[in-house]
Image (cartoon, rainbow, N blue to C red; front, side, top):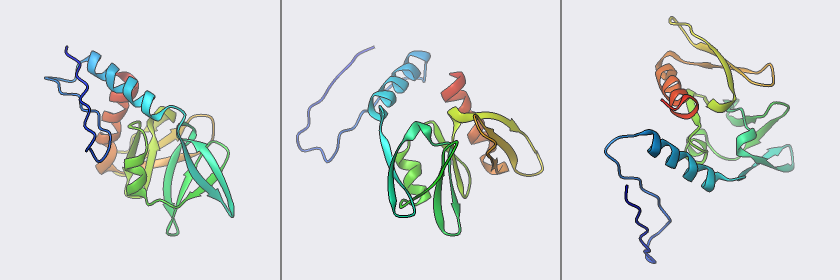
Length: 153
């Protein structure tokens, strides 16, 4: 394995690219280490009425759209976000994945999934009674993300 750092003062933004023949355990470990270093203790600005809160990204269980607003759920609070769901999908660490048209979930916080082959599968979250539903069209993406992030397959 070879490591190269290229300094480009004209670059519009910093970018890390891993070029590999396959996604081996070492590559997954590198991805995880880079992600953790970049995410660190990064926080997201969320709101409850007129108050601004700085919530660690890892504390968020899921985002959902409700009545035209994006809500962020932690185990004990519900915040609103000024961002659209598709923007949050780009901003959040790779352990967040879309599970339906209106929901993004933190796969590290999933406790169980009750599969329903005929409809949406129930996704229960750790440390609370909250649950979300993964639509059939997103179920495989969710399972793949769990394997990638939590089970390292």
